[in-house]
Structures are given as structure tokens and as C-alpha cells.
Length: 579
Image (cartoon, rainbow, N blue to C red):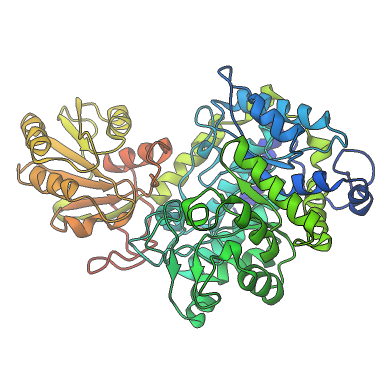
């Protein structure tokens, strides 16, 4: 089947499930719904308060019944905000009802303008809606699979579920090139370490999201892949030269722009080759000079969360909000409490009133926001059907396709002496040990192994000597051992000691890196090693698909992945074994 055919089959299957995927269309529906889309006419009706409200996106709250709380209502009706980053609903039906309530509140405002409802959908809608959705491989898993068709298919599934639940806007794909193995926050969220791989998969996903009617948002411009600090906690800076920026980090964003990306998210990173003083989010040199003037992007620029310490601790909400808009941003992402949202809106209103922020600059951003609502016909698709959301999300076809992606992503890095695969039909007892998500992985192992499965997990991600001794004691009754290690940066020393201690038992041992694939450098003598790329720094976000795929590979299904990064001193980019 050709590349396009595979995606058409997926879209046809989605349509058969009852979801009308609305492709973007210019000039078909105004922000409030109707026959024509005249952004300037709409803009002329707006007060200054309504304009600056449109420029702030807020994270929302939840009541015990799963519906949006009163602070969310106040943000929509009193602050007149134009978009939301939705609180994590429990399941697709609740997500749809949640979005509908927010839209009803928006419809009750003076102009009745619909909201752009957004979510972080890096590995599918599971990223935000934990139950009843389809978990997909992280970007690095898709990079290991090396198949643009699978990247497109992941985007189709994500868009179908998101649109069914009432979302219009997703913060994906990640366009960062992860050139720094010590990067503590991007890691498996990136497709890989090479610009050509990232560029091709970013382009594939942006084009697919556009066709499927979900606003794509490549991030984090101009690149967060070479940092050594987490911008949630401190302000990172990158010191490479302009040539490296042009050759390595900008190509994915250029391809995204050429593919028609309507939105790009900024990075809270100082790129010294462009602006040695300000992070990209606050830098006119980066957002206006580089992104708009040099790269020709005329779409919507949205900031990363402005309460992240990289920004908040250095500039504060009020100052940073105005600086970001002056730099070229159109939408400010506010992820704090209601008071923080109000402060962001007030900062823009005060700057507009005293002339420090020009009316032309504000109107330019509001036109982009209204234009995006028109293009994606948000007014005509204001409300979601909870039953459709439940029917579409997590359906069996999507789950099967996700598992195929997971098998294609799982990488058998080492298998000295044929330790793997384990025999699924034997009565051998398997010990599954680890520091993160061990029980979840062990459950998947139990689903494919006829023999008994035992689980051991340390209390923290850095097992103590006493804990390791207990794991070794538990291993005495096991016939074979799987040890899952996790890192989002350097591997904690206790996990490496755990692997080595279990190796010393003389039992067959296979190690699995469930986060970054670099863990092998900390225990280089293990005989069997598998990389799954399944877990980000936020370990509570469990990717069941990658656990399921890894268990199946361990017990004999063919692994499809090739390393999308280099494991320094051990294995090159592109390495991957088969049975």
C-alpha cells in the first residue's frame, strides 16, 4: 500500500465511526458561527478588554464532578479569554462535556465567541486524557520506527480523538533535535538526534494534522534539544554558533512552516547566537527578527507556560507577558491560578492603555487568533458529542494500530548469547524489577508469559543498597529476570547497581530502558538490552502501548526499531537487531 493510501484508510475508518473530521477551510465560518468570516468586521466590534482577553490562554480547573470550576468560568466570562489549556479530564466523555460547558460559558459573553480548546498531545490524547484514549509512542519511538507513514497515522489517531472530545488545538509535534544526551526535559519527546530525521517526521505530522482539522504546534522554537537544564525549573542557555543553529535546529521548523503550520510554540531558552540576553519567548530578535522576518512565518506564535521558573523567577508575570507580546508572541499561555490569569490580562490591558503596547501590535495578534478560529471553523464545531467521543477514542482499530507502532519502535540493542527472546510457553518464573512503572510492565509480561511473574520495585528512582539486596534475594526463586531502568537524564547510580547485582546472580537477565535509551552506558556489561522510549520525565504519564510492545518483544515478537540517537562509545545511530 502506498503512503497516502494507508492514511486514507485510517481517515475512512474514523469517518465510519461517526466522527466528522472538519478540514480547515478559509472564509467559511466566523468566530461566532454563521455564513461569512470577516475578521476585520469582528475585530471592529471588540473592546480593548475583549482583545487582550483573546491573547491569553489559561489552564483550567475542575470540580469534584469532573466539570470546569468557577475560576474557569470567571476566566472565560470576566477575563474574556480566547483559549484554554484544558485540565486533564478523566475520560473522553467527561472531556467532551467539560469542553461543552466552557463553550456554553463563552457563548454567553457579549460577542459569544467560541474558545480554542487546546491540549498537550505529544503521544496522543492520552497525554491529557488518561483513560479510554489511545496511547501512542513518544516521538523518539516514532523516530526509532523510521516510518513517516506511522508518524502520519499517529497524527490521524490523535486528531480524530482530540476533535471528537472538543479540542481544536494540539501542542505537537516536538520539533526539537535532541543533540544533548543529558537534556533533562526533551529526551524521548524528540524524534531523535539528527536534523534530517526530525525534519521529515515533523513535516509529515504537520501536514496530517492540517488535513485532519487539528491545529498543529511545532515546538519549542528555535530549539530546546541541546539544553542541560529544565526550563520548568531554571533558565537554560545554548552556546552553539549561528551555523549550528541553521544546520541542526532550525530545519524542522522551516519544514513545518513549509508544510503549513498555523502555530508555533516558543522556547524559554537563551539562544546566544541570536540574543545573548533574553530567552526566545521574550526576544524580538528571535520571534520577530528570526521567525517572522527571516523565516517568513506569519502564523500564530504561542508561548510556552509563562509560570515556568525560567520566566517567572526572572521577570515575573506582568513584565514577561508584555515583553513576550512586544517580541512577537500572539497568545500568552498562563498555567497558574485565576489570579495569575488576571494579572496577565491586566498587564496587557494596562500596556495598551498607557501606549507602551501599540494598538497595531495588539490588533495584529487578535487578527491571527480570529483568523485561526475561522480557518478551523471553530464556530461551526463549538460543541462535542460525548457519545461520539467515547466511541472514537481508544477504539479497537486505533489500539491495534498503536501496538503496531509500538512494535516498530521497540529497539533490540544488544542480545549477546541469545538471552532473548524468553520462551512464553515455559513454566519459568520471571522476576520483573525496576524503579518506575514496574507493576504496569509486569502486568503486560504476565499477559504474554505462561509462567508466573513476580514484581519488585524500589521506593525511589535511586535504589538503596538494602533495597538492592532485597531484589537479589527475590531473584533467587526466579528463572529469568527483566530489569527496567528509567532516566530522564543521567541514570541514578542505584539503578545501575541494581542491574549489576541481578547480573551477578547468574540468571538470564535482560535490561530495558523505559525512558532515555542511554542507560546502557551505566551498566555496559549486560548481555541483553531493549530500548522502548516510553516514559518522559513525567513518570505518572504511563504509556501502556510501549509497555505492551516491549513485553511482546521480550517474549518473541519481532522488534522493529533502530536507534534514533547514538549511545556513545557503544552503538551508533541507526543500530538495531532482529531475532
